[in-house]
Length: 203
View 1 (cartoon, rainbow, N blue to C red):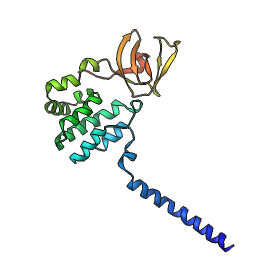
View 2 (tube, helix red, strand yellow):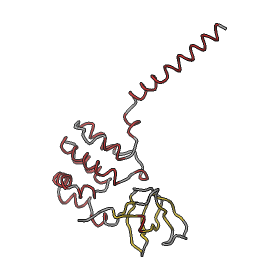
View 3 (cartoon, rainbow, N blue to C red):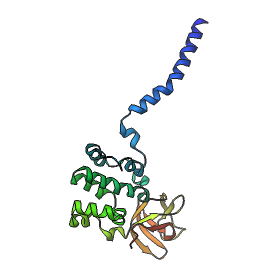
View 4 (cartoon, helix red, strand yellow):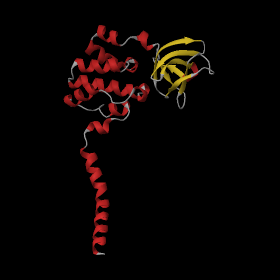
C-alpha cells in the first residue's frame, strides 16, 4: 500500500513538472526548429534585425517553407524590408543576390524605396538580369477562396492535374480564351482566368 502511495505521488510529481520541462525544451531549442513557419513569418521576424552575422546566416539558409506554402502577396513585402535591412547592416552582395534570385521581385519593383536601394546595391545591369519584367508579366497569383483546380485541357470537364492553394504563385502563363496555361507546383495545366490575378500590377 505504501509503495502504491509513493508511486502515485511520484507520478503526480512527474505530471506537474512536465509543463516546465516542455517550456525549457522550447526555450533552448535551436532557432531552426521554431523558424519553419510560412515564408512571411520567417522574414517578418528579421525585418528589424540589425546584427550582420544573424542576417547573413538567415539569408543564406533562406527559407524552409515549400513552394506550396509560399504566398508572394504575404511574403514579399517582408522580403524587401529584410533585404534593405541586410544592405544597411553590411551583408555581402553575394548573399543578398542569392535571396533576390530565389524570390521574385515584383514587390520590390512596386516598393520604390526598396527598388532604389537594391538597384544601387546590385547595379542596374545585374538588377535587370535578375528582375525580368517580361517574366513577371507571365506570373499570376491564385485568388480563389480555398484554392483552384488545374485542368489537363481548357475546360472544366477535363482531367484534373491538381489543386493550387489560394495565394500561391503560378508561372509562365499563356492565355487561351478564358483559360490560362500555367506551371504550378501541382503540375502544368490550365486554370480558369477567374481564379487568378496578375502577379505584377503595372502602373
